[in-house]
Every structure is written in structure tokens, then in C-alpha cells.
Image (tube, rainbow over all chains, first blue to last red; front, side):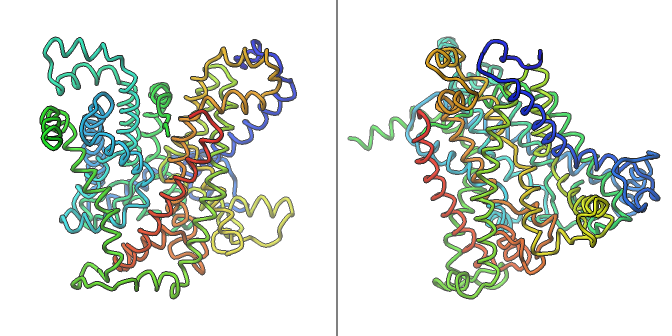
Length: 288
Length: 300
């Protein structure tokens, strides 16, 4: 039972409990992974296997035809496929960079100083954690449209930069930095901006990595079609949705291929940064 | 005198305000202003084309008296908020607690497995194939082969099954930020507390959880509750992907799907704003209620 870390040290844990725990986690884990495995298996199926009855879960003769078909279909639309990739990258990279830097800049004074307005500001941020994208996007639409951002990439990028969760997590992480760290910098005559950039940011690396991942995931997966009508400005989720919209068996393989492709970047990013995220989340606690 | 001190303090902190400026502009424009403006717009007949005129309480009257979908949307949203939300919250906590019993490698793998649906973006659309209504659908096929059913079930368009399926998928996708916060929180619990507890007669895992772990995780529990409220009141993407918008008889409508149908599809922005305003007020009320509840259980 070497995989159970603490059980040797703590008494009072029964073997039945361990066995139950293991079976429960294995079953639930299988359920969690089911759509992933199914999507990968579907995306590798040749057309005749997609039509076969009764349907099979696993692929027999894997092929990459669906992926090739996906690229051909997107290329046949009057906008080249690269255009969608570029749009996805612009939205994700600009939005994430801006979001992380701006929220970190605002998080620093809130974490380390008291000044007129700081308490109200903090309370507003915590209240705004409730308002996830889904519940605000319709009123947001009115604002975006009166600012003439509809049908531009800014409609996606700018709202995502106001990431309150990112700000909150970074602020929490900054709060536990020792004051002596900042004091020694201000003795050297560093301005607040200077302290932020050369003392705070290097010391909260796990927190800004976490914020990066959260904003990246949200933007990478966001379907632009509510805000953008021009085909040349659409991103990958929007075009993949157009392709697999019909939900028939004929497009099942292509739809699965699209889902698999979209999923790869976020999954890799998470695998490489998991420990950083957990380190940040350790300070996520909200008091009062 | 007092006034001038405030001004002096503001002057002395100019550097901080400058640092906060870009975020503040964005935060005000894209979060605060939408929330505030929906209160204002909810009393108008704004439709993005014609001139705005005040319509008093008529949007709210229509919402409560003359909208057949709204009661369904409220019922479904409450179903998510009161059932899926708490279940998912407990699931996050229990799974985090179970995972914490393992060594580092196993813990990393398990964290990934359970968190993966949250990062997979649009992968939940795959459930539409798994629950497909014809006999080619995976679930239908398995059930028919075992002999539990003889006819394929229209999981996503039969109003009897729609919500159950959506709840299952919603739970599948719900182990997000709260889950990570719990894992991290559990790792931060002081180990000497467990040893002290064992001396004081804490015997089982559940006693440990109730008397040692939970009380020392108060702030994490609070944070996760806030995240969970936002997520469960915002349920929409999964409903639309699985059951469509509008769904059969609107049986899978939620406040947010109704809101976006009225707003971004029909441009009845004044009416959509009334829905949004009610949603915001409800969320704030629920939030303050949950905070009170959590204070009783933990040492915050």
C-alpha cells in the first residue's frame, strides 16, 4: 500500500475504507475520462466504422482521415484555415497578456497598501467574482455595441482582460510576501511601479502562471459567433461549431477531430503548470 | 480639515492609483457598468434600434405574469443552484479529500483526471453523441443490448430525461477552481492538528474531516462557495449544446439561456436587462446567505 502516503503514519484507517476509496475513485475517474476517450476514438474512426451498427466504443482501424477532412472542409470555406488560427492566437495571446499584467498591476497596491478607496475596491472585486462571463455577457453586449466593438476582436479581448479571479488570486499570493522584501527595495529608492515589476512579479510566479492559464483557457475556448459576424474574424471554436453543428453521424468524425484538436493546448498547458496552480490556490481562501 | 487630509492621502498614493488605472477602466466598463446599466435598462424598452423610452415596471410585470418560459427557466436555474451546486461543491470537497490520501504522483494524476473536463472547453458536446437519441447512441445501444429498454430513448429532446442528462453533464464539468482550491487547502492543513486529534480521540476519517480538516479550511470553503454560486447560476452552455436553445417545450431553459435568447437573438434588451437584474440580485442574496452559513461551521 505504498501509494497511500499518510496511512502508515496515521492509525485508525480501515482496509475496507481504502478498498472502497480506490474503487470509488476508479469508477468516477472512468466516468470523467469517458468523453475524452470517446472523442479520441471517434476522431480516429474511418467513415464505415462511424456508421457501423451496433456502434462500437473503441476504434478498430484508426485513420487520420477525419483530421484531413476537417482541414479540407475549413479550407473550402472562403476563408483560409490559417486565418482562424491567427484570430484564435491574437485573441488568446493579447487578451491573456493584457489580462495578467493589468490585473497584477491592480493587485499589488490592494495587497500591500492601505489608501483611500482600497477597501471598497476590494469588496467590489470579491462581489464581482460571482459575476462569471455567462451571467454578464448580455448586458456586456450592450456596452460593447455602444462602444462600436461588436464585430471586432476587441469584443473578446477587452472584457477578458478584466479578470477578477486572476486579480484576486494574485492579490492573495502577494499578501503573503514578506514586507521586508518590499522595504529593502524602497530603501534603494525604487518607485511603486519599479517594486511591482522587479520585486513582486518575480516572487509571485506561481500566481501569475495560474492567472495566465485561467484566462488562456477561457479565451481559447470562447466561441466568437455572438460578437463577430465577419467570417475573416472568426476563431477556431466558432468555425468548428459551424462544421459540427448538424450533429449527424456524417459529421461525427469531423466534429470529434475538431474537439480533440481544440482540447490539446489547454490540456498541455495544465499538465505543465499543475503544481504552480495548486501552490497559488493554497492562498485562495476568502475571509469574511 | 478632514477633506484636505483625504486629498493629501490621495495625492500621496497617486502611484498606486496609476498602477490600478488600466484594470479599473476595464473592470468598470465591462463588469460594473453592465451590471449597473442593466438595472437602468430594465425600466426601458431598449431594443438597440429604436429610441429608448421608459416603460416603468412593465418588463417585470411581463416577466412574472406574461412569460411562459420564465417560470421554467427559474425552476431549472434553482434546480442547478440548489441541487447541482451543492452536490458539486461536496463532490469537489470529498474528491479533494480522497485524493489527498495519496502520494504525490498518484495525486497529480487524479487531480488531472478530475479537473480535465474544466479545461476541455467545448468537449462537453461529445456527450450529445453519447446520449444521442437514436439506437446508434452509445447509451441507448448499451441499454438495448442489456435488454433494459427496447426502444431508443430521446435523451436530449424528451422532456422527461433532458434535465437529468444535463445535470449529469453539468456535474461532470463542475470540478473546477473550487476543486483545486480544496486540494491546495487540504495540503495546507497543519499536520500536528491530526496528531493532536488522534490523542483527543478522533478515530475515523470522517471525524477527522468534521472536527479537524473542515474547521481549518474556512477561507477555502468560502472562496469555493463564491465560485460555485457564479457557476451554478450561470448554467447555459451545456444546456444549449445538449438540448438546443430553445429546447423542446423550453424544458431545458435556464435564466441565462432565456436571457441570451431575449438579448442576443431577439434584441429585446430592456426585457433581457430585467432578467439580468433579477439574476444579479438573487446571486448577491444567495452569496450573503451562504457566508452566514459557512461562518457557523468554520473558524473564520
